[in-house]
Structure formats: structure tokens, C-alpha cells
Length: 213
Image (cartoon, rainbow, N blue to C red; front, side, top):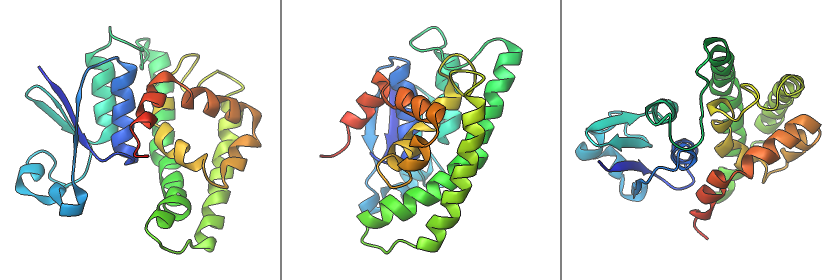
């Protein structure tokens, strides 16, 4: 059965799902969604995701939306292929889940606001709101202080091996490392080492090779 991922190149949620597929060494078809023509709002696409957003994932007759649900499915359904992205031990799995929740509830809202202000607004010719950037830089700095301490306890956020807890950070972190807030990562040695490690993984290099030149 053919695996398909419907998305938009450079969309962080789509890239989150894509890197999980690459980590699992899975063959898949990437299906570009034409936002310029509002393809995501057509009846055909809404049948796949009623919210009209990307990514959408198909594994034969099985369909999913929401990037973190997709990565979890890929990690568990293809557990014996590629990188093991989850722990089987219940206690290790629980700790990994904690840091997946931290990413979703704390890192993602903060980093998404900063990527919008410092990256995407430039693409769309909009003006950066410096007051918003200052507010969310402080939030990111406080969060990365917690990460710095956590990374004294284990090599990765979820434990001693790379898991979904780390993977989910990659798209927004990649964008932020190309902005002035990179200094917040560089100022924290363990955070800096962790960021460099995960963003140099072959699966992520494959993802970035697909970006338009």
C-alpha cells in the first residue's frame, strides 16, 4: 500500500510528519497542496481533513491529520523499521511523553509566534512587531533554561536516545536558528549541542534538501 503525505513544503507541521517518515526509512509520496488556489478548502481535501489544514497522511485506506498524531502512528506502526522513535519501557515512555507535551504546550506556541514575526512576516512583506518579539524572546529564554537543566540529565529531552520528544522541535527550531534568537540557543551549551545534533541528522538533511531554492 502507498503512503502519502499531503502538505506544503516549509510548513512546520508537514515537515514534522515528513522527518518522521524519513527517520523510519519509509517510501512515501509527497503530495503538494496548492494553497494559492485554496485547494485545502475544496470538498475533496476537506474529506481528508475537515479543518482544511496540512498535513494529511494516508497509509493505504488509513487516514490521519494532525502532525503529532501522524508521527506517533508512524513510530508505533513501523516500530521495527528505521529509527526507534519511542520507548517501549513504560517509565521511559512516560518521561518521553512529558517532554512531548512540553514541546506541544510550551515550545510550539512560543516558537511559532517567533517564526511568524521573524521569518514568515519577512517573506510576506509584513512588518515585525518588536514588542511581540521581545515578549516571546523572554518566554523562549525561560523555556531554554529548563531545557539546559534537563539536558544535564540525559543526552536528549526524552532520555538517552533520540525520540519524538526531540523530533517535534525540529521544524520551528530550524527556522529560529536562522534568526536573531539563535543566540538564545547558542548561549546555553547543552541546548546548543542538542540543537546541532538533531538538526544534523540525515533525515532532517533530506527534508531541507526539498526546500525550494
